[in-house]
Image (cartoon, rainbow, N blue to C red; front, side, top):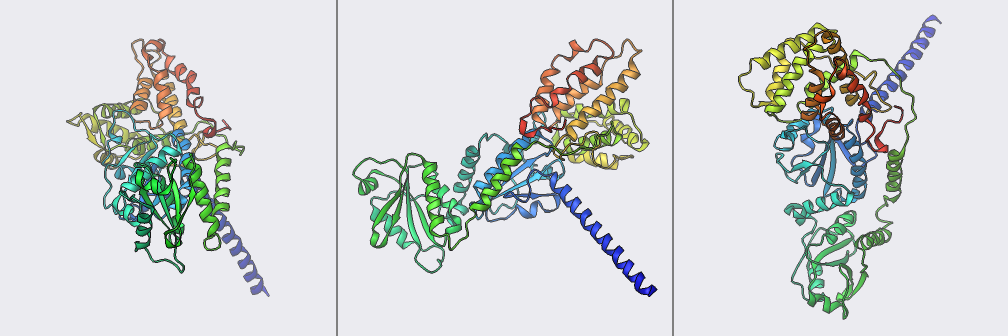
Length: 520
């Protein structure tokens, strides 16, 4: 009886432990996922350090990679556009994949962007960054740039140009337009002589897209209907006057869609002034015809769109634990600054090198150290910079190696305390930068208030650091505007402390409503 009771209690306790473990693991998974701007409901694949290169090199499709930092307001705003673009291009998956990398958490960004001039600008880099990786690529090249697209149409236009200009994709999906066609009989002959992919069962329905030179309408339509490749055949034809005369006696607006019937008979499927309307109506027609053979994703897409719209307009109402100022936030900021922000480029130019050297000096002088090992790292790195022979440039790889081998250490990242937000994408590092410099300004005032010849060092360093390294564009822009005449404003010993306190609202007032943390 005693043995049975013991076994019963053992089983109950084991079950409780397993249950707690399950919830703990799920909590960890949710925490990891929540720091990313793209979840598994979107059509954007999230990669990390360990699996990045294996998922982008030597593939059979074009890859559009979004490099972002989850705390950046520009990246948060762009993520809505990129997610919507991923839903629009979901049928293109055979030719296009969208991926993302959180550069606030993964150092692979520096390796992936090593050939780009974007990371070697005089000022800090602007995230998000978009990179197009061609099919069959064995090594990432320089096809990269800071984000310059302002609408989904702009991003779609640039992407379709990349797809059509790639010979491998152009041949694989028959995206090349055919020119010098004189009559509709020539169109019919080309379609009937086509020996493309094997078809399922019945003869595929055949369509000709007749469009002007330079149009991408037919290419968009082919990509939209890639899931139906085994049931329909679409070819692009460049219009000319003879071809149009064989079809119509009157002038007609291009593009047009022609269905080729048996014995080279034909009928006009669509011709409207609005290309977008013609495209969507034809796609809807094909989906309706083959609904029984391919399950429609319309319900899924509508559900995802509702989720996206809800995320864009939601007002966060969750409860946030409030903490006082914490050394955890200060050490998080130091580590993130010196490893992730500084390494967001390949080479430090003379200006960036001078700012980084001053950063170590000012931290050593005014940071409220609570750990001698951390202080020793800043002391050794300050000496390392002083003994360097060249001040013109420095590779980030050498800098990181020196940081790693210096006698001392940076504390590992922990959960933010005072700077935690309602979601991991809110507050965090930008708040930490403010807290770090606030604490040093207070220390500087206490240490120099009795010295009439003392000149402010912390706030000028903050301005230089934000200009050279801070990758939040809006934060940087408004701070630099507000601090453009610091020398005239810093008159009294406590001017620096008061100035930063008065200008703190600059952090949030200019952000769009959709990316503000409403709890703060």
